Length: 165
Image (tube, rainbow, N blue to C red; front, side):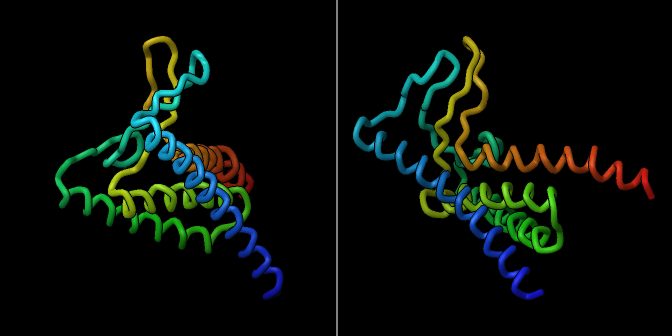
């Protein structure tokens, strides 16, 4: 029993580390370009650019403040939420567990940046004509994917379980 549990734990750790590394490597790449070019504004397709901004708020730049005290409070809240997500990971399994792993991996990636850089580098600029979505990063993709999967799990999977009981 212990062997199965440790294999699952190692697999979960690999998932979280893979998300964290994908996020870190993408940000390091963009930051190297910024260091060499002094700006990142790369045209990829008519709908996608890489454009570097520094986000001091939470998801999609919400609650961005220049006040250091508020920034630190937001960072502490993010740490607290990340700990709660970690605890939830240890108490769930299946689809919900993998969804939480995505959220946790992304949150750790952005938390690292908040602590190391005092801001999160966002650079993926999705747009249609002049309508630009929020600029985001790889960690944000996994956080969003995990949350969408959690919502899906709650609406469709948990709802069916409740109907069957």
